[in-house]
Length: 478
Image (cartoon, rainbow, N blue to C red; front, top):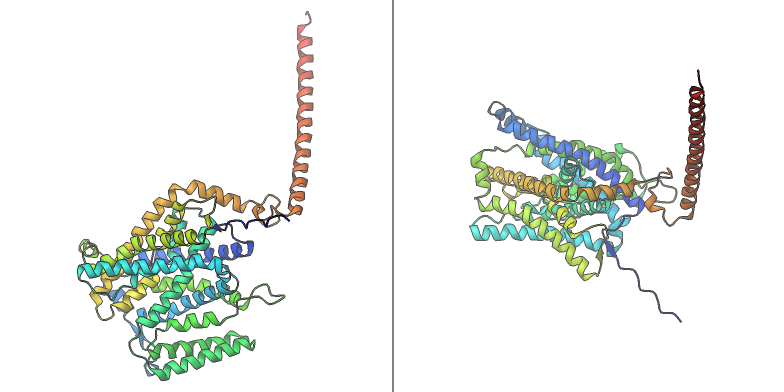
């Protein structure tokens, strides 16, 4: 009796399955476009807020109030952007997380360990770096959560700008990491930034969520049913004192994200496909427009590196994120006896961990919540988020550029489709039909080359005869 074969060692950042690769590619395409819009919005906000002739108009628009006061919703434009539009962003994040849990990489506990541990370490270490910096410098500990978040859209926009063909496995890791990151960020907001609770409003929001869940389970369809209900749930959640974005992520988690027989895509995937462009292309850029407009000057930038609160944010994003995510990934691989994919090096993982230090959208939101009531320190912390994100982006760009040639070769191998069947060849290497198709293609190419060779040989022979014949006539005596 032969001994059982040892199971092959699990690879970290190995090739994605084809369905997962397709989903990730679609999601990242939208996020990349949204990230470019986010960059434009952030730069616009900085210009608008720092040109003296325009500064007052920026303040006027940001603080302009609108909404029904009787319902407790007479909010400023900036407040609507933070509590209203970001609810759409977290709604999409909730759907993403649900899909990952039931149909994506997080469905397999062994595969889920890596991004979850990396995300937790990538939040714990920046918080620790911030805390140590402020304990040492005598600063406020209120902002410990500011450097814990990763902004996937901004990170992908940086990748698009520097032209790095990052392999799909690393991009998927970055996306999954950010999704888990967003979930823990919203839990931090719910637990640590809720001062007083109106239990009547919160109870109403819970009842609304129960109705939402029941309608979904009964198969009720129609945006005209769910949109008004979602607005009521959001308004009740806002008035309860719990941050209104909790309503968005709760509804996202309730959608069904596994496919029934005969379905091309699940309801969750369908709704995410419709709402993601709204989130990435409108909600998040508008939030950035009214949150990133902080005064930037030589003195203000100098304060970023001298105040313990702002220095803690910068160090948390640049140092804490990179060490936390890289360390969590390395330890997970070490203790699960997994080996790194043959095509990658640990330097690639460190570069992606550095890229995750771009904490923009959620970091700005937490900064506003952490230092609410202290406008000057809030602006300083926002400047620190921008500074830390910029430094992380520059460091990641340098690290990724070094390996860009290698990444480009890997991406070309992932994209190659010589048999033109719409499926990359790398996913068909174990399919006999693929090799038969390729043999047929090569046979046709070989036949065409033989035909061309015979044609050229015939042309050369004819030319030689003509040239030789002309020479004989010219050699005759006159």
